[in-house]
Image (cartoon, rainbow over all chains, first blue to last red):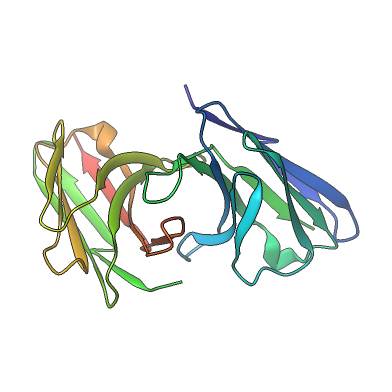
Amino acid sequence: ETGVTQTPRHLVMGMTNKKSLKCEQHLGHNAMYWYKQSAKKPLELMFVYNFKEQTENNSVPSRFSPECPNSSHLFLHLHTLQPEDSALYLCASSKGRFTEAFFGQGTRLTVV
Amino acid sequence: GQQLNQSPQSMFIQEGEDVSMNCTSSSIFNTWLWYKQDPGEGPVLLIALYKAGELTSNGRLTAQFGITRKDSFLNISASIPSDVGIYFCAGQDRSGYALNFGKGTSLLVTP
């Protein structure tokens, strides 16, 4: 059982499409994160939200737009992506600062 | 993010053997975490370390937070086939939120 659920698990989109990734956590956590995992590269932090407020944006291009309507839900809106944006996008949550993060199963994104 | 050096990059061992992997950083971290990732899945937390010098076990897994706060190791004793996967170390910086990950250690275990 995972406390962090991501949908969809797989997504194929064209470069002109607009799509959204969804993440929901059932752990009562206050912080949520988006990470990107590309082949042969370490996991990279994209965004951090704490109590719905964005606390970190790791120089992510504007074609990735996060949204956090409440502490349990996190979205990543995608538009005009490039093929090099193809990767596994992982959502995570934690209670707050200096606590362990728990990950969802990820969305495998392919941009064609 | 800060660069973590994780080694070895891969290991190919026989069932029953012990395994050791480590991570080093040029920067100090306040927290060290170890995760395991299976193909097509998200990372699963194995062990979290919060104090320099801390040694923590989780079943056959043992991890330590280095005294300098710049390194950590993970040991797996008596490996079994289901230990196969990629193991990642992660250091949490002073923001208390961001995790900086190593490139992973790929473990293969033969029966």
